[in-house]
Amino acid sequence: MVHQQSGFIGFPDVKMKPVVIPDHFFTELLAQIDDLAELKLILHCFWLLNEQSGEFRYLRGVDLREDETLLGSLANEQGLRAPEAVLEDALQRAVARNVLLRLEIESPTATPATDERATVEDWYFMNTVKGRQTIALVRQGKLHELQSAIPEEARLRVERPNIFVLYEQNIGLMTPLIADQLRDLEKTYTPEWIEEAFEIAVSRNKRSLRYIQAILKRWETEGKQGDTYETSGRSTESERKRKYIPDEFADIIIG
Image 1: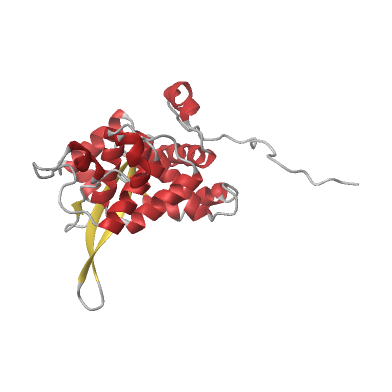
Image 2: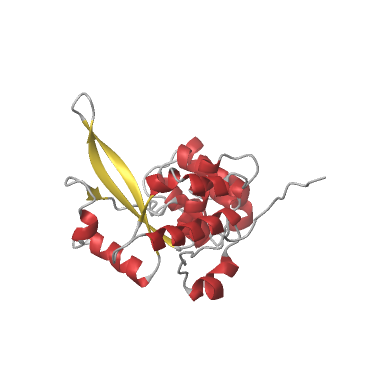
């Protein structure tokens, strides 16, 4: 009986093109990466950037989302989730970990009714000295090589820290479940509310998503008037705190 061979059959006996990966990837970064999809994405980005020529290299989000090789490698990750959804998580993680640097380009697109609607492209740069310099030059409007790929009317968007970055930098490591909860927050609340809720949680040393969710839920049900940090001089310290501390935590924090 002949058994069908499975798994990797080995590298072919032909001259193969090497892919350059900095040694810091193995000595500093690899131990920090705890998500297989993120690891696959980063390695794939190294490969794609190696395939490019020229001094300044970058990746377009639209190209990554249409990359059949990349999507195929992510098809079996994180249960039954679609590879496109897994890719979005991996991109968010790589940006939050500061491995990939994200730049948003906004340009108008003419509709059949001759109206103009803004479309946004996300570009990614590896966080190397050259990548950081490239982004700085693009932001200053000094990089003609990259600007030639941008429509003349395009402008750079000043992007708020996305919710994944806020969580990773202020709370801790993400899991797929937390990622889903963060997406729900983005759909429900404004970026200003989310950022302020994170600031309050950090300032009170209550670094948990549950605490942030409770703050936002209270604002949603009771209203949020003006700056939560500013109250009238007649308010007591406890009253000022209770304006933004969730009820379920108030007795513990205020006493």
